[in-house]
Structure formats: structure tokens, C-alpha cells
Image 1 (spheres, helix red, strand yellow):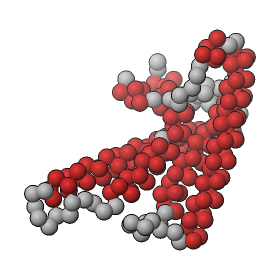
Image 2 (tube, one colour; image 1 turned 90 degrees about the vertical axis):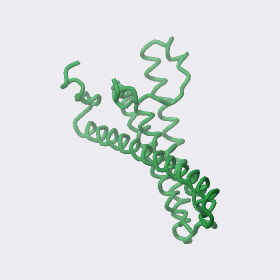
Image 3 (cartoon, helix red, strand yellow; image 1 turned 30 degrees about the horizontal axis):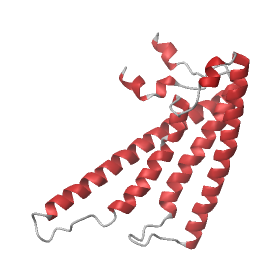
Image 4 (tube, helix red, strand yellow; image 1 turned 135 degrees about the horizontal axis):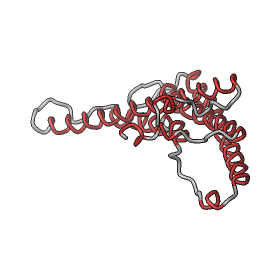
Length: 196
């Protein structure tokens, strides 16, 4: 593959304004994946710090036996990791799906099934993202904080909401790509593509 082909947009066949929107959504999906990676690295560092503090407290008196916010913040980071990684995973083709029917369907039926499944998923994720936006706003407007650390709960909720909204937008892009007959998955986003 020539370097120019590797950089070529998978959305190149789309009309110009739509191509820009699809490219922007692909960029957001990459950002989404990187944010998920940062959350996962932060989660790992927090858990390692918790283990280290616990081990040190066994030998040095006066060192606390745990980090008071470790379990609470790790749950926030885990939720953010899952939702932040979802849009990029969808675009890379990493979500679990049953392809038995698709593998044996003629191309026209396969395209209709892709459009229908992406549209159903879009409706579901749009509703979920909308509900999370309302939930996060309600927590913000009430000034709700967590009991153990006084963390404003709208902050981790906003991270989860952002990830869900990006997944809904990626499903919208998938519907558009399926209707236009564009590639639905970008294998360049897969983890193996980075090391190959």
C-alpha cells in the first residue's frame, strides 16, 4: 500500500459537506479512544498507588492504610474508560456482533441489515445520551456531591455522558456510511494496525 493510500479518507466518496462531517466524527472517535486510554492509564496508576500505600503502611507507622478516594475515583475512571472507548471501537469494527446472517446474505440485504441495525442502535444511544444529559444536568443544578470525597458527581457523569454522545454520533455516521455504501469500519483504528 502506498503512503497516499494509507492516508486516503474512507469517506472520500461522500459529498463534500457530508465528507467533512464524517471526517470530523472519525476525528472525534479517535479522540474518544485516546481519552479512554488516558482514563485506563489513570485507573491503573490509582490502583497501583493504592497497593503501594497499603504495602508501605504495613512497615511504616503513620502512613495511611489506603487512599481514601481510590475506590470511588476508580469506579468513575472505569465508567469513563468504557464509554470513551466505545465510539472508536465501533468505527474500528471491534464491537461484538453476530455475523452469521451477514456472512451468508447477498450484498443488497447485507447493506439493508447494516442500515437497519445502525439506525436502531442510533435511536437507542441517542435516547441514552439524552437521558444522561438530563441526569448530569440535574446533578449539576442540585450541586450534588459524593458522600465519601465531596466530588461533584456531575463531573464523572459528564465524562460518561460525553462518551455516550460520541457513540451516538458514531452510530449516526455509520447510518450515513451504510446508506452511501461507504466502508463502515476503519481498520486503521484497530490496535493491531498501530504495531503492524
